[in-house]
Amino acid sequence: MKTQFATDAWMRATKLALGRSTTFRDVARNWRSDFYCVVKAGNTVPQDLYLYFDLRYGECVEAVRVSDPSQRLPEIVLEGSLEAWQRVFQKKLSLLQALMTKELLVTSGVSVKIMGAPKAAQEFINCLAAIDTEWPDDSNPIRS
Image (cartoon, rainbow, N blue to C red; front, side, top):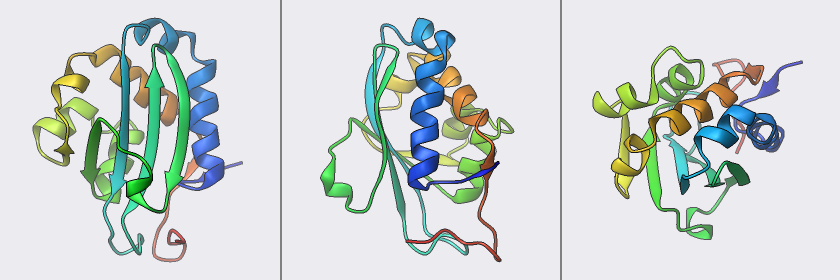
């Protein structure tokens, strides 16, 4: 059964997928970062979405969608359109390529934190890509 993108259920699924991945645990064992994946408002996204991830040394400590971005002060803020995030989370576009082509922008923090741990960043994406995700469209937009 598909899980709708950016819902509480999807965020729980991301935390679970990361927690089950021995590969993520191994490649991220020396990496610590917390960040927002910001999905910018658009046709099927009524307002900016803030997906917060706290990753510490191979573990996902927290994965939540927050309604007020001031609730967390992450080290990095990555922003992009739903289409860009969907391509990244479906592994049609690598995270590093999305950053280099500015399809995703680091609006706070430094991209070196991500680029300095490419295996951990890639395994993070691999785990999220494994979730059977229902993506929003015109007939099924994201609800606030």
